[in-house]
Length: 219
Length: 249
Image (cartoon, each protein chain N blue to C red):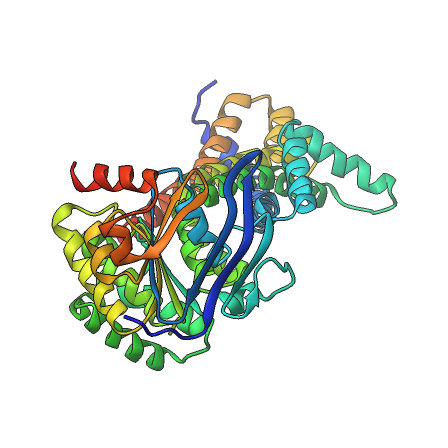
């Protein structure tokens, strides 16, 4: 059985494309959602109020210490039990978003805390509010610091979207399993799947490097 | 230099703890408008903490502290409105590294005082000229020497039109050849009647520019005297020992 059995690709092109489309969609939604949610959780974690801090800490410690698959099953099986009907794609993407957000929150928190305390002292002593200080002084510096770590998390997110395959989320992995079961040509099937993931992750990786260089120059 | 105006800063029986550590003990201190007060003392004596209480970068534990008519021991005050009147210059400059010099200076005037960009820029340029580095307006802080950065920090404080300027060891992080240019700016500010509270080890500056010297040790104010008296004959043994160490090292 050869690595490069292009017949597999040609015969199942539509399925590969349908899967790729869902993988891209899950990744994009997950990426936006986990960045927004992650930033929000990070701000909770460093907020000057004990209750907010506790909520942020519980979220991070709870979510990032259980397997992604379990988080996804929680949405996939749990939400319908609560009377909220969700399709596999939605519950998988939600799980992915919530899971990745815990890692992004940690990266952003570390970045914010890596900005020297003198920065916020200077800003606050000039009369800027806490929120203005975050927005104009702390966040722009923290983003430069956390960009590599966030890049890693986003690449992980794209690859982790393959968890959708387990719950029939109609993504690349799901169709790969389907094609494998009907053809028994697993090696070429998963080789092409690997290439499709590379097609998504390599440009993402290059984009992160490009932004790192751009940010580094502006300093 | 007797330009006694009204009371701008008044500590009454102020105590401050960091956990169980008693940093400031029974502090009584007044500073009137136009006064230049230099706070000296060995490291760890609480002088920086005392200064940082004046704009509430540090809160006090008990006692009363009134600055520019605002009761800082009262938690319900609008702290941001209060702070716009108090400029602060730090040991490590604390310029914003991601912003150009001019943008460092105009941020607070625009966001806090609501000036337009044009107004803020014009004002910022006046002060940059006064501290002698108008040509660096479009540079980033990292392109400036330490002395230049500290002068930008002073201009940044002055552009807010503060009633009081606080200086926390403004020359301690500078190479020796740059100390003079920063002290010159501070000296001219003192001559123009700015109310200043300065923590420093620069005794030359203290002798020339200060109206009063406050000597602290172990969290207490040991001596509070006119500058000339303090340098000619300090009353307290600890102040004498401190001075002789500093002047004859």
